[in-house]
Length: 193
Image (cartoon, rainbow, N blue to C red; front, side):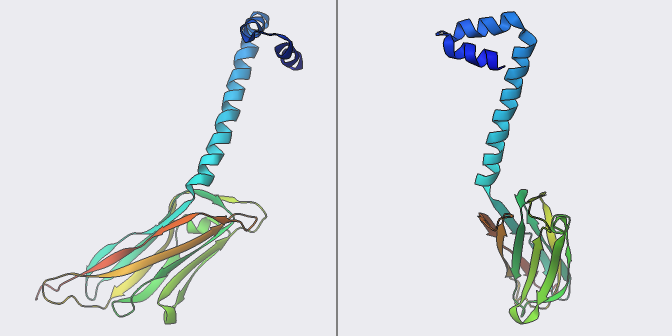
């Protein structure tokens, strides 16, 4: 290979160089081109992941007063060291029942869900146990179950927001770009209204 690089420097015409390589061993030349193409694609695919950032979003739900609803907090695929998700809800309309880790949420070895009643908030925190980033697949970070306690007046449904905020970091504690999107629980009027 070194011999070819030296020849490239000394050949004034690239076409002569390509002809020389093809005449010596065409299979080796094709192998080099394929290897360089794969290497080139790897560099660009890693750059695309970093530019895209990370996204966390909530699913919505529709229910009547007295029914339970389950909200899923989902994420896009990313390589990271740690991340946190904060989900806020209106405790006059929704009563927290439970939460659990999803497939993406449990991908980090140090992961947990915590309910903070006074803040009307459910928090997810996950971190790696090493100095390396972990590839977190797209999926469910956590699911949260609420009892609908709010009422819809008349025949008009009432929406109660589920707001989501997230922060993510790589293994060297450098912030990763995160977009967060909440949703709502739509409380339907009772059938007697």
